[in-house]
Length: 213
Image: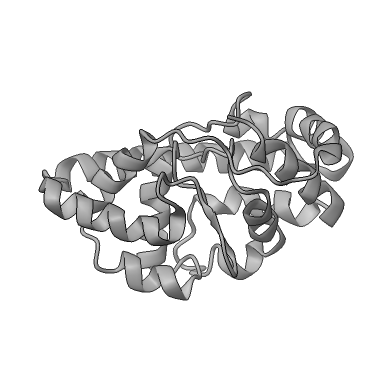
C-alpha cells in the first residue's frame, strides 16, 4: 500500500506540472470587470469572502485554496470527471484564462473559518491527520496536505474547510470523483484512503481541519 501511495503521489506531481505548463501557455489577461462578474457569481454560493456557506448543502470554502488544485477541479467539472450538476453548468463556460484568474483571486482571500464542529472530536482528528492509521493503510494527511493543512500545488488546502463539507466529500468519494475511468486524475490518490476511513474517523478529521486557520 505504501509503494502504491508513493506511485500515486508521483503521478499527481507529474500531472500537476503538466497542467501548470499548459496554463502558462494558454492563459491570457482577464479584464477586471469580467473577473469581478465571475467572482461575484461565485460568492452567491461560496460566501462573500469565499469562506463557504451552509444552506441546504454545505458549500465549500474557496478562500486560501491552492490555485493549482482549484484549477484542476474546475477542469474536472468541465471534463465530467467530477460529479456536480450545478458546477457542470458553471465550469463549462470558463476559458483557461478565467480559470487561472479565479484560482489566483480566491487564493488571496483569508477569512476566519466558519467552525461549528464538535471540539471533542478535534484531538482524535489531529492524531489521524499527523500520524495516519497504519493498521488501516491510511498515511498521515499531513504528508500531502502539509503540517498546517494549507496544501501545496495540486494538493488542496483543508485548513478552515467546512467540516460538514469535508465529511460529505470523503464519505461519497467514489460517487463524485474519478468518474471518467479513461481519464484518471489526481483524485485517484484519495480513493483508497477515503475508503479505509470509518465514519467516526472521517468526522474527527473533518472537525480538526475545519478549525485550523
